[in-house]
Amino acid sequence: MWTAQHAQPTAAVADIINTMDDNNQHTTHFGYETVEESVKARRVADVFDSVANRYDLMNDVMSGGLHRLWKAFTIQRSGVREGSRVLDVAGGTGDLSLAFARKVGRSGQVWLTDINNAMLTRGRDRLCDKGFMLPAVQCDAEKLPFPDDWFDCVTVAFGLRNMTHKEAALAEMRRVLRPGGRLLVLEFSKVWKPLAPAYDFYSFQVIPRLGKLITNDSDSYRYLSESIRMHPSQEELASMMESVGLERVEYFNLALGVVALHRGFKF
Ligand code: SAM
Image (cartoon, rainbow, N blue to C red; front, side, top):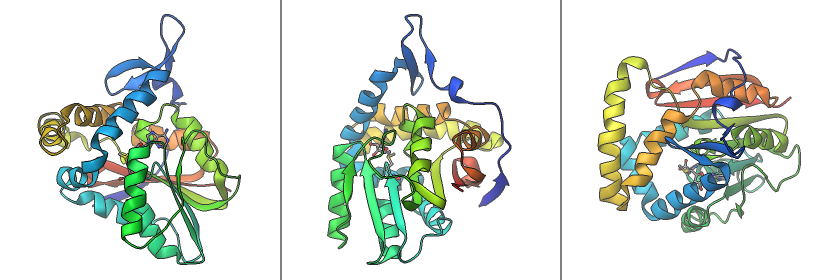
């Protein structure tokens, strides 16, 4: 189901994501649209405000439950054990935080964080319902309110794609890792080429309709499909991670590259 490959450094990739428009405004992508950077965060917030209530149901339906396996694989590669300190960045409704909370026990710490209040509130409530009172912090991944060298493991699942300055966010995640700690990035990626036509059909014809049916919002799920196409490839993301100082960067393709788990260490 997955293949492990070591990343080959490629050219710096920041330029393919953030550029300047004719008026010297910084621009970036919101799906296929080019927007000013200041606009992207608001549009992303609108997406998650709109889908927060039915986000978990939609995830299960859209992925046929596969996102649970991808997250289980992430936990397995995390090295997290009893007593570990874990930061879940863009943790949303808290799937990873919950799994980590079960692993670290009373002597460990798991911090659920997200920039979006609707997603974070839902995550916090879900965790409470399962008996876990974890700290939940609303914050931007690009400016994490945590000290240097603190966490054993930092994760970001399906969040990086939505961030405006991906390298800044990755650098922040590295900063808060202790030496020897690891960063795990679970994200949609570039699918195996022969599968691309079927995957495109599913992404652009089926997913927006499912979004309409389940969340009454097809636009947010069209954004999902477009943002996946605009996200760096496996190799580009690995290079980005190396460019912020992460080491031993490798990635694992899941479901033929529909998703990839990247892992890097801070030494
Ligand atoms: N990690 C959860 C999961 O795997 O189900 C939620 C993923 S959800 C697709 C993406 C999350 O990223 C949203 O909750 C969104 O609010 C959050 N997000 C987007 N930009 C962010 C930023 N700059 N800082 C922190 N969180 C961000």
